[in-house]
Length: 536
Ligand SMILES: Cc1cc2nc3c(=O)[nH]c(=O)nc-3n(C[C@H](O)[C@H](O)[C@H](O)COP(=O)(O)OP(=O)(O)OC[C@H]3O[C@@H](n4cnc5c(N)ncnc54)[C@H](O)[C@@H]3O)c2cc1C
Image (cartoon, protein in one colour):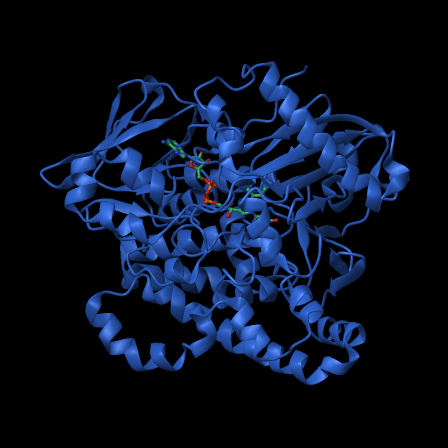
């Protein structure tokens, strides 16, 4: 088996560290890199420490056997025009990330025997829904209005995370007006007030896998964020998802900052109640009074801080209000023909047993039914027009499906790649089952798969540090979305948080969290001119 060569960042060695940094960032995902790049832009010297062999977190890609796969970027929305999302990507990357549009039908939903889809463009999205549900025009229009309302509330939701008490009090009337009642209700309840048509509700929630919770458990604000995010279609970074971190890192290096890989932080060091630096897995201490963790809230408060420090600051108690999102399997497939030759679409497939998403999840989680409640299929080499130049004559496909951590827990202390025959057999059985679903939808692919490998929750733990292999950090329940302590500033002076647990999952969610963390650290006076530069 040929090993991966696609690696970004420099290998950590204590002697490669600068004498002094203004900030240390734990983790090089989109949240960590955004914070590091924006602080660097303000003149800070920042050190990013990444435990994996490559930088990028869930935006990294890897190569094996002549194929290349992304691991956490299947499509990004809102980048086809000069939106705030696009401007932020452009600013961070100095305009170096180019985006390829997917097919106008960016998502296809197989719900039992029925097939529906989502189409790009606000009006086309609406007309397409009405075409599929001609008796539901009123409900569809009502729904789109509600999406708008929730969408307008999102900036206020973000700002609340960084306001001081007095700023919050001063802004309260505005924040109140900008918070419609539906925001923190569960998605199904909100939608079932608009329509009784269970198929329509299922189609509107057809992207629930993008946040990891089915409609009776998810929060309407997150549902609205996701649907609006893709309303104008899906886009893919040309050259592969690793291009995102590759093009952001120079901003960090420009002010003398560093991005190190193989750099596992063991502990955040706290003395006299204040952060004084981090202790690395090799025992080396990096001194710094400003430490930003993008390693996830669970990791930060349960593993990177001592139990005393986390407990005294109240985080042990606070953690009881949140739970990890569910774990998942990934199947990474290689084929010895091009996407064009194979007729692969630039459309994501979502496969559901029927329209009762919650029922299917419940039965699967309880072990009463082994049918996967959702299977997601993506065709990255079809989406990326440059893939063919990097890997001529080949194509790739990826499948994602939920899988409880408990299925694999008994191997958790084993080393990656050496977990033994039983583990490999289980992985292969699951991989074969999922690939059957691919053949069912695209029968001409049968016999054409050259190579595949399966990632489990243990792989996510190994490469991304997520303790139970969770897909999206914290679960996006209504309770979690209302936790005021999930904000950049912690109660431990010198320790800040960023990444998907602060706002929402998604590359854009983590990027916006990076902006909020920077704003929180440097204050409004310094962030305002930076914001002007980004959004002008
Ligand atoms: C299968 C899958 C598909 C997805 N598809 C999409 C999609 O199509 N579009 C989209 O927008 N989003 C998608 N997402 C979600 C998106 O990728 C994430 O929400 C986002 O990238 C998270 O960024 P982050 O910075 O918060 O965390 P991460 O990217 O997870 O970064 C955290 C980093 O911290 C590092 N770390 C942890 N502990 C330590 C330590 N002790 N020392 C040093 N480093 C440490 C980890 O190795 C990791 O690199 C997907 C996610 C998954 C898993």
